[in-house]
Every structure is written in C-alpha cells, then in structure tokens.
Image (cartoon, rainbow, N blue to C red; front, side, top):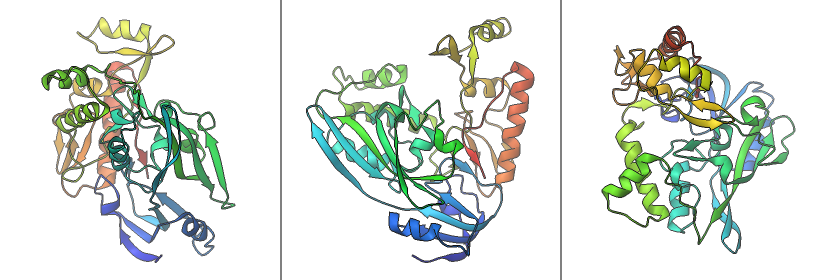
Length: 335
C-alpha cells in the first residue's frame, strides 16, 4: 500500500476527466482500508470506487482512497437458492459473468452496467426491469469514524429509484454485498420490449439467463457509447417521476408522449425523450456534448473539463424545466 502525490485520476473515472488527486492510495483489503481511515495526517478523505457514476469537476485535495478489494464466493446453497458474496472492488459486469458461468440467475438483466460492486448498492443500479434491491440480501459497510463493520439488511439500505441510504449517509463505505440468486428454476424477466425483440431476432423461443444477458449486451452496445472509447458515465439523469395529470398536460402539447407506470399512480417519462425534444441530442460543444444516439448520455470526446460537462448538464436542466416544467435530477454524483 503506497500513498502517491499529484496523482492523475483520468484512468479512475469513466468520463476520463484528467483531475488530479493531491494524494492517492489504493486499498486491496478491508484491513488496509481500516488502516487508511485511521491516518490522521489526512483528515480529508474521498472514497473512490469504480468511478463510473461520478463527474469530477475539480482537483481533489486530501487523500483519495480507491477501493480495490477483490473476491467472489458462494456463501450457501439450499434448494433453488444460492447466496453469494462479492467484494466492493470487483467489476460489476465481471460479477455478472461469474454468475452466468455457474448458471446463477437474477442479475442477467444488469449485464454490462459499468462500475464496481461497491457502487452498486449506493446507486441501487437497475436496467431492463431489474434492480439490485430485487436480489440483495445485505451489504457490509465500514464506519469511517470507528472502523467497525456494520451489516445493512435490504430494508436497512432504504432502496429507492437510483437511491439508497448510502447516498445520504456517506459515513459508511460499502466493502461487500450478499446476493440471493436462483440456481435451477430461474425467473426470466423479458418484459422489456427490446429484450424480446433481440430474442426474436435470434429465433430463441425458450431463452436461458445467458440468452437474456446476451440480448441486454446487444441493446446496450447499440444504444450506449463504450466508456473505454468515449468518456461518459452512462445515463447522466434520472427518468423523472410525474403524476397522471402531468402526463395529460404534456399530451395536449406533444404527440406520442412516452411514459410507463412506476408506482401508485406515478409514471416515469424517459429523460432522453425530454432532452431530445429540447434540442440537445447530438449537440457538440468543442470536445464534449450529448451523444448522437442516446440523449441521456453526456460525453467527453477528448479532453473536456468536468466543469464543461457540468455546465452542459445545467443548461439541459434549465431547458427541460422551461419547456416541460419538469425537474431533471442528475443520476451521477458531482465531485
């Protein structure tokens, strides 16, 4: 474990922003993390996981602590349920692949989501009809002040749409998660139309969890830019949740308003549709902009600053508010 100074974070955030950490350390075990948290000479510590859901707008003072704790194992197996534990530094999609190789079902719809396992519960990651909360039993997190581990049950995590207790209470650092997966009789979630379309294209009548994963990967590759090639954080904004009255109001001014049921007379409107209607889809400003195929994705084409992309996101929010009277909330964390 080595503390480095004036360290570039370009490789540690999917936007590829070349921000500088005053000090940087990567921890490879829970013990190392506890040791680093005790370092009084660095009173300011910023915890960095996979870097896929953040926009760094400035250099970071103090100590950046990169969570690189690895490991996946089966905890128990009973009847149709296998419980697994995965540590925070594992790549999320690598975990999905690990499960698929062992025919463990439940997270195949979450294939190819960028980022780390440790960030997954913070965000309650979700896609194509599945959310992490659907399979998470618990997660272990370290208290930054005491260095002690606390186990959070699914209920304790207070999961909501792209939200959890860990977004509000940053005193805890997730170090591992425990998932409940099926090992024989899998529930196949193919309600999302795009998945069924991909299965039909391949003439798959009785899909497996591996088939669903492949369909999701194809959809994501078609719609979303590869962060290894174009800097981005995936979906930048949450899909806003509105009332049926708001839907009816929009219908009077716009044709074919897309929406879908969310919960108790609430509905989601795709943020991408709002952004496209506001005229931002495909717009480029110097070397950053809005992706040409997916308006929900803001991109760094080369060497943009985080502040450039932040200002673009604010412009989009203001335009959507002005045109639709709807507030767009950022899904990424702004640093």
